[in-house]
Image (cartoon, rainbow, N blue to C red; front, side, top):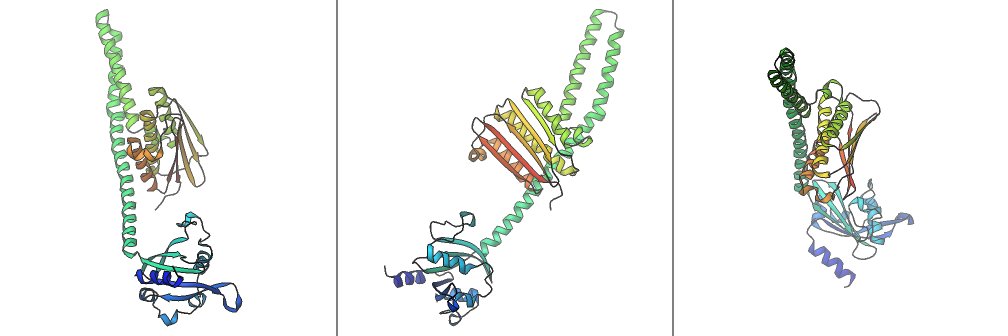
Length: 359
């Protein structure tokens, strides 16, 4: 198809703001420039300019304050079919098609640049104002949802702590007192039959007291508030090894910082959930938990030698929902999660969050 036919077909079939330019020598023979060949009504409107101010004019003279160097981008596309950027800029360097977001009054637009013919370039602006408004609203709602999720976790923990405190301070002390009384009663029994019955009651009370203390630790470990995050996670690792037979090694690096009770609770709960995932899904024999205290950030690593999984499948599984929840809650305090997993070779989860508060 002839060049003019190609350009005419593009011009007639696109109603979005459109301009067609070609490469020319720059003013005074300095480098390359672009000259406007055609623009449509929509392009005039969004730029608040007339055709006479554009057609035949150099791009550099029309847009003297080209901070983003769009002229350079368009010249590269016209000459090579490529922007010269990588795919991280949202374009395919092999296709000759470029997409970027550009704020052009009176709305929000996407900019498409492509070269249908060597040394010619087409600019198309697509009005994305409605989409942009919805996207901003969605981001706002996502931030609110993450905050609510984090607040729900904190509210649950406060309830857990209240129950644990009641068990420890009231019921626990009462059970200890009863145990001492039973032991004393056992020593006073002369008849073997009576002594054995009381001794059996002592054993049952000891078992019940142990289970109550274990339950108290499970729902809200006092050590988290009395000593700190590192000690609480270490105790959780020891508890996992003692109750499930999985070797759990804990390491703490750096000096522990005061991170605030809310963030301390969130991080502890996340590590707890990761260890629960190991127990339920990984079939691991060894777990390594490392907490690194830096000047600005805290990093917690949970690594196991279990089954591993394909990351793309996590959304379909219970463990995937747990990881998604952890990601969202950590984002609410400015943190991020990185997961590396290989089937049959284990999983490593890294939690990183700033020490200072995040708005």
